[in-house]
Length: 115
Image (tube, rainbow, N blue to C red; front, side, top):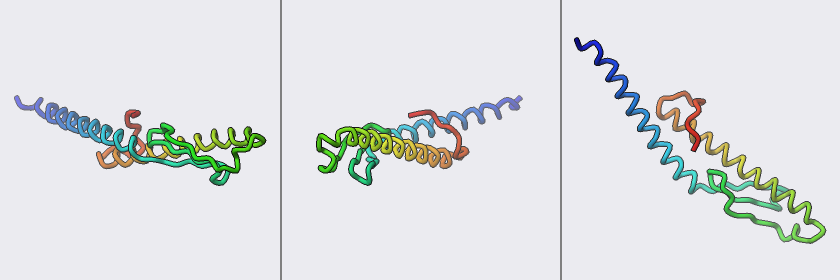
């Protein structure tokens, strides 16, 4: 008669795990919005700051690349620095998601929902 109750207990465990994951993902979203990651290009001539989510929040340019004759170089370096910062932000986010998955007892390479 109580044979079917095992499935209910399993379902309750799954629901609790899903709620824990949802809570941890919300915490990660908040954390990613606060962390600042810097990408560089041209040996530091251009630096770009972005959040852990990859949103660009600032650009630092060396005065030496602000000459009109170096306009194309400056544009290329700015683009390269943005790409570097966003790549680092993606790597950071993936490592944090893997850490959370592992803490929840899931495989570290399990793809969690995108945030």
